[in-house]
Image 1: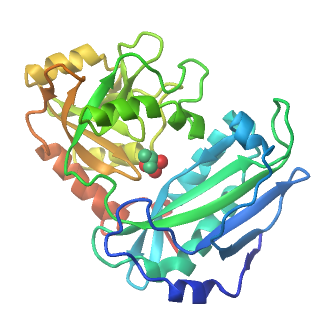
Image 2 (image 1 turned 60 degrees about the horizontal axis):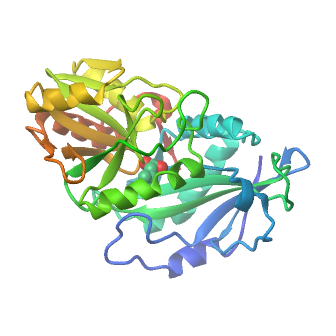
Length: 352
Ligand code: COI
């Protein structure tokens, strides 16, 4: 596949200056990658100026919600950037596409678009140890027409935001959600990255923030007894010096960072248990101090320690250590791995 590169890309990047505080998802690189799916085929990728999209009000995504996305990061490597686990993100993108009755995108096309984007915007990624480039590949139904059915045409895009930390605070407070669900278990869409899962989380997110929490912790939607994940990240606990995390089911997102942590834990001789995690057992163990640490993890969040779990108006369950020693060890190893400073499987680091 060839990628068409607009001749103005370099000058657009050269003219762009970074804001003082990058934060997360506020400032966007002035370029974007696009590709259209037409007549059952993907057309060539294009890298061009970042620009608004003009869409017909009857575009199917607005009505039936066929939209998926990924989040992956690139890090500065001297004068260029490298992508972390781009092929794993490409594979997960296609799992999302299949679940949402959307066409799969060849993995090499996903990677080629991401590499070209990184090459072009590399000057906008600061060389400090915190900054990175967060890439947001996404795809949506762009056929015009009403009537519930899969769209016949789609648009794939990659945009990117030079970013700093996702959470401004060092540790997060997590609200246990007992009433709402983000995605139905047993055949729902919880295990894929589709916009609707995030839309369904927002009412709870508002309640959480109003009550002084950072994020919602979702329980399984059938029994509301077992821990699943947060709105935008997976969760790990440290119980008796072992890592404990919910076993994947079809309503938990298979996080790439979650998987990276399994590999790092093995290297660091930290046992990992994947199991059904009843919330009541966790709260009992936090109280009894056999569960001493908890952290959340995701591409955007990295590893972020959890300070407490709670519910509005009830006494919180505060973790004995935040950040605890195991969380810190893993966070350091993750940071070094993502930045290419620690050996990792060859496919994980792709130079742009
Ligand atoms: C990510 O970690 O990349 C996500 O998509 C989660 C979102 C909260 C930014």
